[in-house]
Length: 241
Image (cartoon, rainbow, N blue to C red; front, side, top):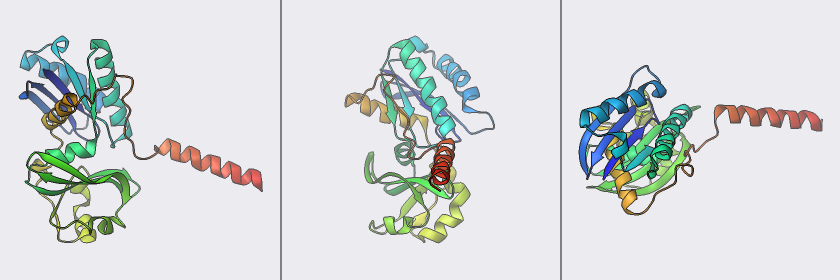
């Protein structure tokens, strides 16, 4: 089985081509270009270098969120269009699960943290044992205040991963204490090959969706939606005066 994985949920753009659990090629970059400028040219290059045509791909895997609203829309729209055109299965993988599974620092508690803006984070907590990943705290949007209490019930070192870690490392250490460990960034990036493997495991379990069924996991309202609701609330308040 040939699988293409695609990730545009954060500042990274990532692609991988896997054939029968063998990694044929992988591309991961963080640059000033938008995902819409990166993904298709990079996919064409990767397929050419691995000597595989898009018509030979059997399934697509995409990171489903949470993450950047724009990036998620680009990644999912691209994956859905390809799945529709090729009439092949499409699998979504939660972004926080990808970051946790891709952590290369060993076993233990893994805390993926993505930027949710307004001084909040998208977070979850996983226990990683070998190749097994157990979800201890389901994905949620969480301010830094209260995060320590959520994590206090779980013993052991916590390895922080995610695109919010480099920016907020000192603030996180101050709030969560010495049990929080931060490895070099090369050990905590969203590897597209790991995304492909997670997708393959879901395919084997029959967790397949038609292209039109897959939806992004935002975990929060967009800025536009927040402003719209605030405007409506203000209009209701004025109307009731």
